[in-house]
Length: 167
Length: 184
Image (cartoon, rainbow over all chains, first blue to last red; front, side):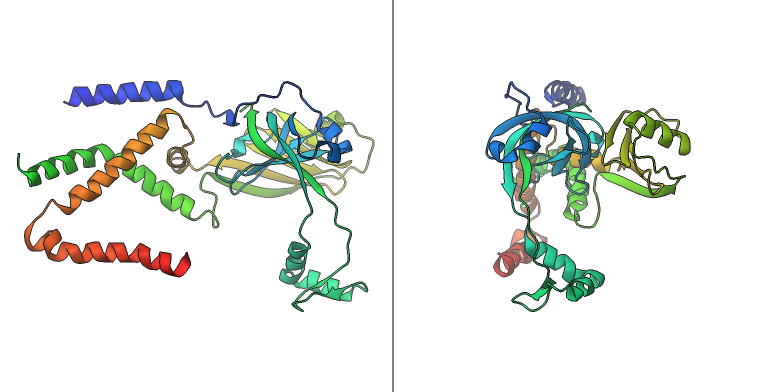
């Protein structure tokens, strides 16, 4: 009985090692043949909005709490693009930081919520006071938070479908 | 074989088989239940180091790296780097990142260490291996169902399901139902 269980355990261990993912591929397989330069996407992001792209770069930042996003460096200095994935579906490990990555996903855009800026100002006494001093400050409907009239720019990110990271 | 004897045998052997997995899933369950309070996989230490600033904005990445390595007396080999801005550069090492601002002379050092054992339990609990492990985890879930059902029928009499057992069973069922009523 003991020998049979031990044999079963050994078989399971070997087979699971054979079939287990090596931890380098995340999410779906990368199918796009052509690599798009991140700098090209960032130059005219509206052209890529809604398109599936494959990009390459170094992982320069990883979501510390849930591994739900990574930031990839561009082929040009100072530029990065954020790759956001669904929480829990893909979890990027902290070890990915500094490692080369190939990512496939859909470029999308969104306008950052002014409400969150407002909440920041409300949550921070200094910011709150600073905002109140600003000439253009105005009260929002709930009367809680003064907010500046600022031009909010669209943010472009990639919704990651799959990634291969050289960990 | 009598019904209760079969129940005892199934419960006992499934219990032995599931014991380690049950502990693994329980440990990881508590760990990931408090995601808002801590990182269940890593211990991330962040420290700040001051060094002699360098206001030269014409430095190349190589020169910036060499300057930081020299000023911070770094002996580890740099695996990769990223120039964040004219004066900021990130240097990546194995398990460590240094983000330095040459203009201000401040370097943030981030060291990432695994939470040994807990990280491994999370790896299994959250089905990171996928593929074959998915079926092992499914089998374990079925085994837990069997353990729960057979557990109710091990004893008979006043300590069995017909006796005090039914009250505990009801309490155990009411707790999730109450949460569903109030929070769903």
